[in-house]
Length: 154
Ligand SMILES: Cc1cc2nc3c(=O)[nH]c(=O)nc-3n(C[C@H](O)[C@H](O)[C@H](O)COP(=O)(O)O)c2cc1C
Image (cartoon, rainbow, N blue to C red; front, side, top):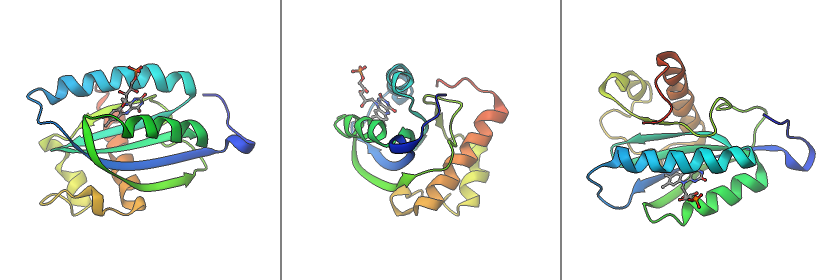
């Protein structure tokens, strides 16, 4: 990944949103999102992780500030989700998700430990998470994703 410095300081934005349209095949939809994300993010040096749990999305986007904001604005316009809320945004010292231009993980029952750790198993309400808690959640998911070597695409 190209080093980013000076006015192009590394930024990380984490937001959460809800699936907008009840879709019979959410996995298929997510597959399309990830394919477009990898194609676009690779071109502009954006990396990140998209977590899908129930009808919630939680996504981290990292890269130069300008491209992170451009990417987020485009994502915001996407009718497939709604109620987007930024949980944290600002400079970051290093990439936490540098292995992936974008990677999606849908929580499985085996991932309960993560939710337990966040005390978020009974009611998963990412819109109430602090930026720190959201990053903790996504880095925990990153760890599982890396360990299980599951395909980056759902
Ligand atoms: C939850 C969610 C996350 C998304 N994440 C990204 C992303 O990281 N990068 C991206 O380019 N598009 C992302 N998209 C898709 C964009 O909204 C948009 O459809 C896409 O960038 C259009 O790309 P295209 O013009 O190359 O088809 C996301 C969409 C949703 C609903």
